[in-house]
Length: 166
Image (cartoon, rainbow, N blue to C red; front, side):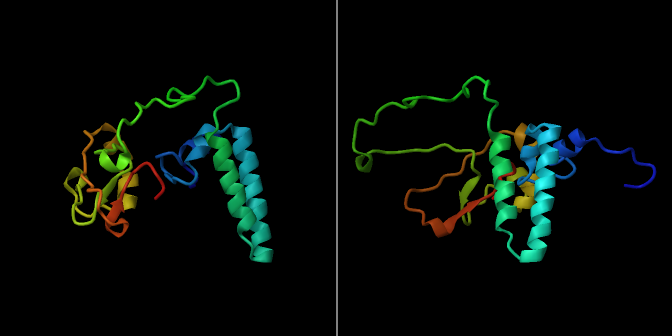
């Protein structure tokens, strides 16, 4: 920060990880935490980082980040159930054996088959980093569909999604 830049609030700092100036899918959960919880997380993270320098063990550092992510994405205890929460499932029972049925799946996962890149925004071979940087464009564009035949080997699958850490 130079002398002409106004200090950044903790709230602005937290929000900057969720598709902001510090877009980082590992830490976008900070946007959903309180300033107090974010400060506690950062203090804990720095404590474990200091220990890792001494011990070489980054396990507690990773665990602290993971636990903070879990806590950051949990709804508040008094929140209503999620809109798409079902006790018994929203699906129609399958009438035939799955082996004898045609099954289709729609997902927003960004999967496609190698050699059949959907070239979002006309850009061939867009990287995951480029997709993350253009999340705003993805959120306002018309979705595209990619066909993935059922016999496609997993080694031929590719994925690119601006909103997920892949």
